[in-house]
Every structure is written in structure tokens, then in C-alpha cells.
Image 1 (tube, rainbow, N blue to C red):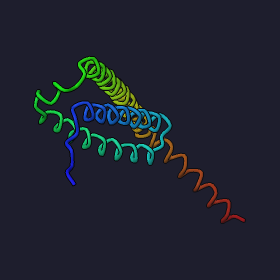
Image 2: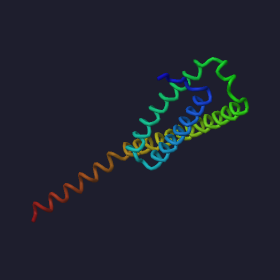
Image 3: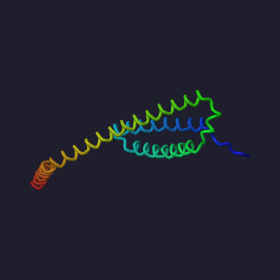
Image 4: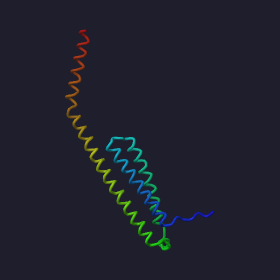
Length: 142
């Protein structure tokens, strides 16, 4: 049983599918970040990493193909696939930039909250200590 090598067209279609799946995973990650669903973000990150590995392998296979192998393909079909690939690639880049923006804004928000907490930490701690002391004193009198 001989195993046929995949054609250029088949590999390009595979890569387009992987790019679409990566775009979806990035969109899921963006929604998870916005909703503070850390577990969903972590799961999406694992999926993204896996898809990137698959994309790397598919790209390597395409690069290894000789130009001769594309000669048997229908030129209009190959051109259409390349156009679909470019659109899928552009979509991944766009969603990736959006995710980076959401992560950056989230990091700024977390830093601002931490700074605010640090600034008021002494005030809140003193008030909590005062309230605890007052309750303790009231319990001792009773």
C-alpha cells in the first residue's frame, strides 16, 4: 500500500483550515480575557499553541514541495486558494492584534488596581483594626 504525497492544493487547504481554527481560538481567548475567564483563556492558549505547531509543520511541507508539483494544478484554483490563504492569514493577524490590545488594557487595569490598593492599604488596614478593637472591647464589657 503506497502512501501518496499530499498535493500543493491539499496542503494549502489544510493550512487555510488551521488558520481559520487559530482565528477562532484567538477570538475565544479575547472573549475569555474580557470576561475574566482564566480557565477558558488557558485552554485557548493550549489550543493556539497546538495549532501553531500544526501550521509550522504544514508550512514546512509546502516549502519542501517542488514548483513542479504545482504545474499539474489548475492555475485559477491555486490562485483562488492563495487568495483565501491571504485572507485567513490577515484575519489571524488582525485578531492577534486585538487580543494583544485587550491583554495590554487588562494589564494596565490590574496595575492601576494594585497601585490604588497599595495607596489605600494603610487607611483600610487602620480602619479594620479600629473596628476589630471596638468589637473586642464591646465583647469584653458584656
